[in-house]
Length: 290
Image: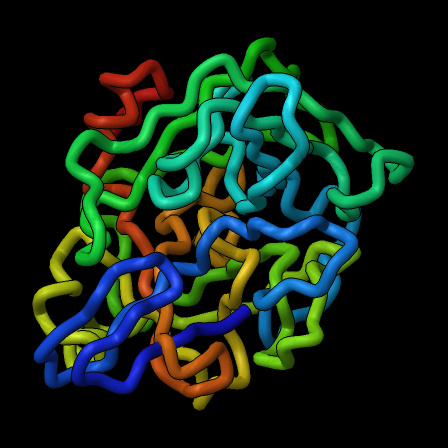
């Protein structure tokens, strides 16, 4: 996975927003993939390794449709946080009414793959305050039409307690997105993961400016562009690298990167989940016991 960024003055970024008179890089969301899935796409996980069976059972793939009987026109990652709730990015769901969530498989594009389970959404809920181009409050909750019982290959990830993540913490992110900036790239057949490190917010402010970076975000270094998220990874989960109690804990949601490209070396930016625990609970998701 990786980032993309525009080099300034006046730009038209991938999310359709104009960025003007800014002294820093312009952020670009890893927009929901909106091409046929057998055609080339523009985004994936960089520097990743293949996820093992049952290793990250909370990771899901989300296929979006503009109508209930329509074809898939968008793709994002997400995470199962309860039997009936999936967490993803607001910019993923904002332009859609329907979604199908694929769980239990490492090959989300292959309906014949082991463990493949597809469940339709009953509601897509983006945060009310989400807005472009600043990309604040980039969080959404998908309610599934039926509950999904936990099993070895399908298991919700716990939410964090407040203030439970700090610069220097190690984390893991996974997705089916592109592995480099090659425009001929495709979505990955297999789920990939990469280990990353949480950086101080000042690192991201230095790249994107304080307009886009505040304490509801997490900043993640990309080691000069060799690791990280890329197109097709929007909405996927950033989780603690070590097992904590019942397992990993979700700390972030993939939001945006740099318009210079996934391999440009600029940091990735995630929505910080522990800033939205009340919003998740208020909208039907699980609550967190401190």
